[in-house]
Image (cartoon, rainbow, N blue to C red; front, side, top):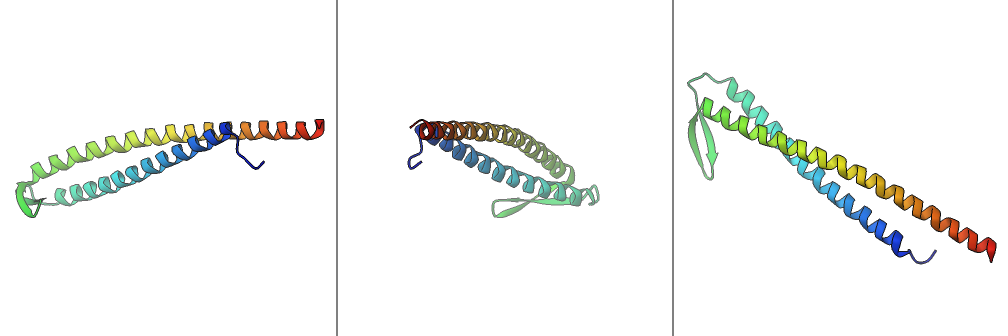
Amino acid sequence: MSQIPPSLQDLLNRLNQANAQLQGVLVRKQQFEAELKEVERAMMEIDKLPQDATVYKSVGNFLVPQSKSAALQELRDRKELLELHVKTLSRQESLLREQLEKIRDEINKELARLKGAAEASKSGG
């Protein structure tokens, strides 16, 4: 088989596209998970401080003081947003994995069909 039939080429293109999408989702998910761990670590450290402690937040090139409770609230909000992103990306990951499996099945069926057609032409000719 020197040339790939258009139907199979289309399936292979879809497979490559879905794989690329999956890789992008996995990279973004990994980035959000890493940031989530940083936020959780920061929350644990700030929790250890006395209630009246001043916490400094980096804003551009400056460190700005803020209360412990304000810092914790900001981190809780960020954590909630990151968890939502991770959950959404996990769902996308699952859907893409299902899509990849379906495309692989279609490719296998197409290959079996082509193999059967090639064998039939050899034995019939």
